[in-house]
Length: 296
Image 1 (cartoon, rainbow, N blue to C red):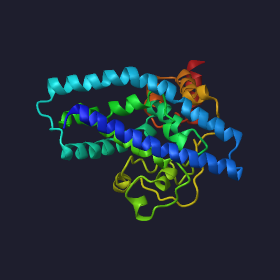
Image 2: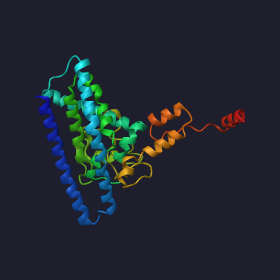
Image 3: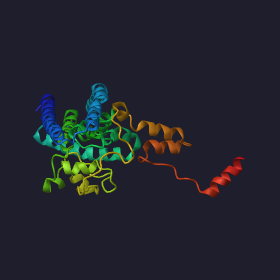
Image 4: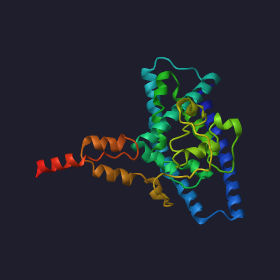
C-alpha cells in the first residue's frame, strides 16, 4: 500500500457515504413534500446548514494543507519510527482516530472557545441529513489539530488523515429521523438513534453520545444515553435562526460580550476556556458593600 492508494481509498469512502446521504436527503424531501410536513422554514434551515460548507471549505483548502505539511515535517524530523502502511495499520488508524474523535468531540463541548465552532453543528432545531454537513468554519481544522498526537505514536500522516475522513464520512448517514432504532447496534455503533440523542437539548440528553463510529467509547467513559423519547433538537438557549451568516457566527457575539465585561485575566480565561455558560460567582452582599466602602 502507498499513501496515494490510501488517499484514493479515503476519497472513495467519502464519496460512497456522500451518495448514501444524498439518497436519504431525496427520501426526506419526498416524504416531507408528499405528507405536507415540509415547511418553508425547514427548507431555509437546510440552506443555512449547507451554506456552512463555504467557510469550511475555504479553511480546508488553506489551513488543512499547512496542518498536513506540519504533520509530515514533524513525523520526518522527530519521530524515529513509523508504522508501515498495511491493512492492519489502516484498521488501527481508523480505530485510533475514532478514539481521538471521541475525546476531541467531548472537549469541544466543554471548552467554550471550541464550542463557538461546534455549536454551529448543534444550532439547528431540525434533524435531517443536511445537518450532517453543518460545521463551524474552523471546526475541521481544530479537530485535525487535536489528532496531531497520533503522529508521535508512529502513525503516518496519510493514515491519520485517512482515519479522520473515514470517521467523519461515516457520520453522514446518522443525521436523520427516517431510520429508527437498530436494536443491539445502537449500543455498539453510532447509529441515527444514538446520534439523535447527541443533538437533543433535553437535560437527560445534554453532553451524551460523543462517539464517531463506535458508541462503545461512551459506554466506557460514562457518557452513553439510549434514545427514549424523541429529543428536542438544537441549542439549550433560544436560538432558531435560518440566516446563514448568523449561523456561521452564532456563538461569537455572546463570547465577545462576556469578554468585554470581564474584570480580570482569570475571568477572561474562564470565558474562553471554561465550560460554555460559565459565569463568575456573585460576591456576597457583605463583601461587596465592604469593597464599595473601601473605594468611596
